[in-house]
Image 1 (cartoon, rainbow, N blue to C red):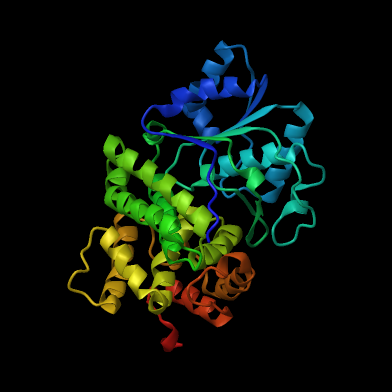
Image 2 (cartoon, one colour; image 1 turned 180 degrees about the horizontal axis):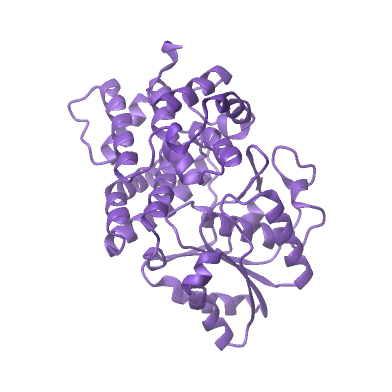
Length: 393
């Protein structure tokens, strides 16, 4: 038996943002908080959200005091602001950070204590109420945050999460038209993030027939369109495929989980403030190369889903070719292929390893048990730019 959880209502497809106003009306809200990235306000994208609401007499407040890989302090400040102003609906617009913070604000607005009290690894309090209704609108493809129950926060050297089904959006609006203006670098990082979600969901020990179908289709869509989306940002088909792929990957990993790549990526973001997508991208080939022996058949399937036929290859050969294909994809979208490429010093590898080992919730889903020595070896491989496997220790 498998438990599957999905956001109650999702709108997907070009131009589906027009569904926002009818959904807001359904909640009978009057005082609306819009949590968004500052640059989206500068671009005028927030006008597409706010103007229809203002024309109908809603009171709106746009909150932009957020940052990529948001530190805990930013989450605390937003929650305090939300409690103080008595909002009755929260709209999140932007990338994963904006959406994660919007979820956090909506739920913790009706709770007491600090955000830190509810963190997965160290918190002592439990969420007891659903909180304010929330509508999440991604502008990247993407983190999948619009369909997950997780809010990720950066700590001093690593990351932690607040996670509960109360954080699920009431409404997700996934409109690829909103991603057209996304710069190539962000398109690449968020796109490989989504691809990582799909791949890790497919090899997760919690994978099932439903998540497999979602993950494989996400891999097909993303791997087939990400290069075009990065290099031809105005390509409507590529943007649509990336949007759908990210959405499906989000549904897949929310129900099957992510594992080693994310566990090792969190400390990179925490210690060096590398964008989450970039952290996943640089580690993806090395983690998959290391755990290859534990999931050869699944990696053969991934290779096929990437549009590279494995018809005349053994499972072992296909799994090696899959790792090569992932390396090539990361290279093609201009993301550095080593930790050195992100200016990570060699003497940071031990601390990165220590922090990654604490991500027990995520590591538990890996098809291969990753102990401290394994994790260090993967970081070392990513630093040196050389693939390593367990027998090479």
